[in-house]
Image (cartoon, rainbow, N blue to C red):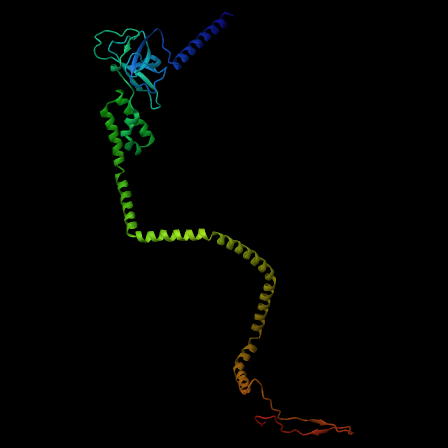
Length: 343
């Protein structure tokens, strides 16, 4: 029973210790004894309780309160700080609010100022406004880099912005390295100068062509406007005509459905007629050859009017007289009704 109990106690202690470390890390709580100080700033925008206090980049405390300083002519912000008692502050310490990241989190950086001469800052003393600096005004800072940012990718903008903040806050790198980075980005933009120049030249050509034909373009736009206006005014008539066309299409479809069987029969009959004509080709050819002569004779016969003259050249028959059983043959004669005589 002793071994399991010891394991349980050890596990509980480790869990409690780990929980304490986690809580103190999340809440920015300090370890050991803390010494309280105050610092006056002209601007503490973005600084909140719990933000870190750092010396040389190492966390040594946290912000415990923010308010207005008393006994000053102008409104001044006063920040309450707690710093580990193991880190004494020199009497000439300077406090600066800096950006922790681009999200906007801040921290208070403490640096040794002039005139300390080995003296330390007493607990509860105030770091005056003359030895403090507020955070950078990013609106003004990045406003000057706006033309450059517009031509960069989001990743380059983030990297360059963070380097700008670090340089102007006195962290990591120098102005020379920043300018070198800006120069490299500018060089990458300069590599695209030929493409940009070509685009500008093409746009110049297009604009010149449009300028030369401005009258035609203006006339085209006016005509298009008139056309669209006419369509808008006649939209009711156009809509009605579309309905009429739809009705006509329906009627035509019905008519074609009704006329299709007779039309099919007529086409079949025409096929039969064409076959018959092909079979009697000799007769048709003879008729066509004699047709001019016959038409000429018929025309000559009807030349005197809209009638035909007929001549009876011969006649024969039997005449039966009353009281006789057999007829008497009438001899052929040369009777004629006028015109030319019989030959």
